[in-house]
Each structure stands twice: as structure tokens, then as C-alpha cells.
Image (cartoon, rainbow, N blue to C red; front, side, top):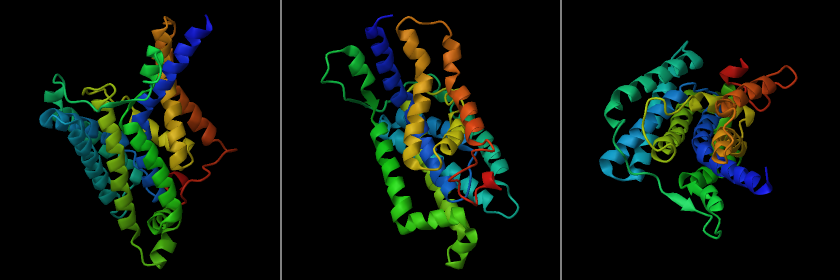
Length: 306
């Protein structure tokens, strides 16, 4: 196999990493913010599916992809708000509630989204960063989702805000020591509900990316477990928003490897390569949660650490 073919594969994986990784980026950033406040949301899969349906429906009915993105974010925020409120009740477990909300969100999306399986909706525009090249492969690889730069900016903004603002200090305090937060007069439940809601709002944008860019349609198997994978991704990123960006691209590249090889005529083991993101998730969980490598960087109040 000559060098030009390997270059085509590398470019295809690069383009695919951005394309496939964009939903991972937003969902992981949303969950990172939620977990920083000391709450875990395993209902992300339901948030992702419901927001994808709401985004597609909004775009289809309004004719504007950006209206769809906004509705997707609102739908994700509302479901996350419900999760936050339920988890604020006495003797309610975050993980069990998250699983229930995952089923609720998925069920609502499947029921309300039945009429949306066939129609076509306005799509999120792409940004062409490869116009400087005459090579079609370069142009295709650098044709990126318009939401991706927003996700990069959001990762930087969350990193700065959590480290340098009073709001970030309060969120981290609620996640690391609820007693200290209460001693300073802050309502831990309020902080966690607001953080969970904002995290769901951000994750909802990832759902819009699924239904309005890639694959760009609505169907009941759209998310393929990406919401649950995002929880593992946050652990891998050590609860750091900027590391979530790198982890999302890594997972996106793993998901794009199979199609990239198939595009140059290598079809052997195609389905095996399609399982790469799931295998990577398992490896990451084993590696990061081993006795020699504990949950470094995890908020002390998080359910995972108790």
C-alpha cells in the first residue's frame, strides 16, 4: 500500500474524528460540569436522544437548523433539570435516578419522534477550512461541523470559569465539600440543580449535532450509546474540560477508523473497527479505575467515589 493511500486514511480519520467527536464533546462537557458539582447524570443517553429528536423536529417545523439547535439544548436542559430536582430529594440515589431518566428520555423521544423518521430537516451548515487545497480529500477532511468551534471555545471557557471565577469556585466547592459550601451560606442542592441543568443544556447541543449534521436524520437508534460512553470519557479526561476535547477527538477518531479504511478499499474487519469506541471505553474504564490508578481528580462528593 503506497503512501498516498495512508495519507487518505489519515485525512479521513481526521475529518471523521471531528465529525463523530462533536456530539461526544458537548455531552462530555455537560457531564463534566455536572460532576464538578458533585452529581453524576447517567441519564445522558436519554438527554441525547430526546434532544436529537427535539432538534430535528424544531428544524423540520421551523425550517431553521439553529432553531432546532436551541430546542435541542432546551429539551436536554429540561430533562436534566428533572434529574437534578429528583436527586435533591432525601434518600434518592443519583445513579438509579439517572437510569430512570435515561429510560424516560428515550421513551419520550421514540414516542414523539415517530412522525419524524421519514421527513428531511434543515441541516447545520459546515465550515470549509480546506478551500486552500485542490485535493478533494483535504477539502472533505477539513469540512467541519459549525458547532465544533463552539465546542472548542466552550471547553476553554469552562476551564477558565471553573478555575478563575466565583461561580466556578462555588461549583467546585459543592463537588469537593458540601459541608464547606453550607458553612459559607450556599445551598448545595441549588448549586447542583443549576449545574446539572446547564450540563444538560450543553449536552443537548450534542444531540442536535447528531440529528442535524451527522448522521443528519432522526431514527430510534441514533445515539448508539454515546451518552453512556461520555460518562467514561469524563473519567478518562480527569474531570477537565480541555481534556474532554482531546478525549472526544480520540473517541471520534476510533469511530471513524472503520469508514476511513473502507473508503480506500479495506473492508476486512469492518464491523470489528466499528466496535472500536466501545472497546476503547472498556479499556479506559479498566485502566483508569484500577487499584494502581484511582479516580484522581474526581470531586470528593461524587457518587463514584463513595
